[in-house]
Length: 270
Ligand code: HL5
Ligand code: SIN
Ligand code: MN
Image (cartoon, rainbow, N blue to C red; front, side, top):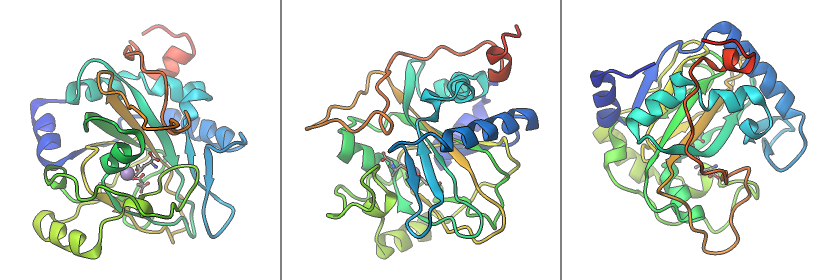
């Protein structure tokens, strides 16, 4: 899959780009099954909701589940990322935010690069995020809301809250925008929440302001977010590096598969 000039221009202008139904139902089924398996793997990479014992997020599933390892190199995902960023990229971070039905909690308004600059001393915002819809996303199940164009406003924050919400990762609560900052930016940029069927992709900038509301609907909103970083833009930790489930250590440039990930996994040639 190749993005056309207009799509690339839209990504640069808005800071995000939706590609509907890039993956088919069979592929999404396999990814969901791999996620269910991965939720059973015990360890600090599984983050639970504060108020109940449900999964809030799981990190680095591509280290354990071959479907996700393949997906990270699938031409429909990695191809556009290389067009938007550069040829030599690797997966810096991988997470699935589960937003369970009947109570998946909010993700506060934030810019990703604020987190990575503070926590990992990542030199520059040379990343592209890819959101993969593991469920259909609609107005009811807590879609991500973007402020279009806000990636061109610079960083809104340069420090984190004194008290961390989570010991496992940096929760957006710790770097949340103030109400005043958000009101000013929304007046300039407005708000958009990309929606679509399961299997849709949303590419978005590490500097765009985004967040999402709780999910009180009867439908889960499982969203994979993979962050690709330029291999020439590596973190340099001031002290102890963050764990490798939050910040991946394999910085070898990724090669694009020549077939969709399931075909590659099953050894079917293209
Ligand atoms: N949880 C991420 C991390 O690196 C940061 C957030 O959406 C990305 C802000 O710990
Ligand atoms: C995030 O930015 O990490 C959370 C967005 C979401 O899952 O709604
Ligand atoms: Mn984010």
